Length: 147
Image 1 (cartoon, helix red, strand yellow):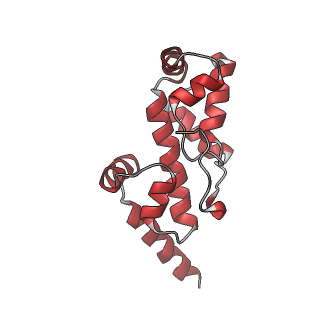
Image 2: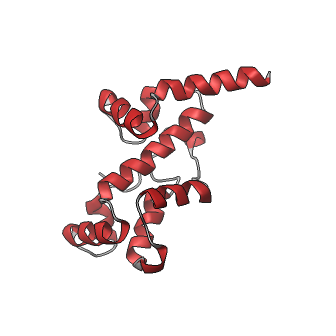
């Protein structure tokens, strides 16, 4: 798996705003004052709008670290595992894409590397308290209120 996956939906790129990044980072208990430069680079990669699929081994190779060293350093500095943080950021990108496009939910989930749709729906609901479909439905309700 490569760090950067070719984009099938180029208009679905969403930049996480500074507020959203701050919220994600506070959820993970990141202390910017003690952040190692390598971990700051990893966070920028994970949060980048161009990155759809990212894996620990590729990032470790890019930084010339072993996977186990990166895993340990990331957990120590960020307060959560690399995998959990990637999932959190990817879910936020999915949420934004669902709110701003009409792409099918299954396609949006897959574009952010969620291939098991039932598991995706479960972790989405566990994270946001609502289903992916209700995010789309609430957006449609909001748009009809403004018409």
